Image (tube, rainbow, N blue to C red; front, side):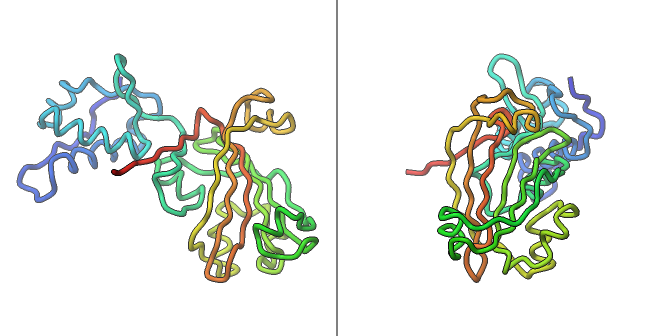
Amino acid sequence: MAELNGLQKPDRRRPEPLWHQAEMALRGLIEAGEWSAGAQLPNEDRLGEMLGISRITLRHALRNLEEAGLLRREHGRGTFVRSATVIAGVHGLTSFTEEMRALALAATSRLIEADRVAATIEMADALEIGVGDPVVRLKRLRLGNGLPIGIQTSHLPEARVPGLLADAGNVQSLYGWLDEHCGIKPAKAKEVYRVGRVAGIDSELIQLAADTPAFEVERIAYDARGPFEYAVSTMRADRYEIRSILYV
């Protein structure tokens, strides 16, 4: 059970709604590491008592934290701090590093391969370049808090990313590197999600048996000049979620 040390009670004299104050107080403990991944929160009665708020107000705060990917609520068991999980479908265009930061997780990457390849028809169509044009390919293992989340292979037109291949071993945030060295600022992206399986060649890296079901994600990212990245990823289904909010 998670301890309540350092939990700041909402102040009714402040202009912010009580649910927002409670949400920020709970988020603070999670992001500071006071409540570690997998820790169970006190039950709603106890937590509401400690915060000095009603159950309805508390549930509003807990729901927001769940939607943000910081908590998971299990019927009949309680509420737990979520382990490393990327939530897709509820954010704007961000890098993996930014997604991890939003979930209070430390993002790291391990470079598996970096080379120059000739653009296939699929790459050329996605990047709007000629078939056979040189493309920088980076294959990386993506981790959150040291746990493998996915394997991502990015393809970028070599003409637009001078120096990337030589510096590939030092790149943690690809989008950060592109902004700093090439002036490439992502503006939008198109993503396609499919149900696939872990390839045998990747099973040891992602720590799943070959043919285990997984998400396959294709992304084409654009800046003001056009497409600059065509990425294909295999994401662990137990650490990657897709959520949508639907409106009438």
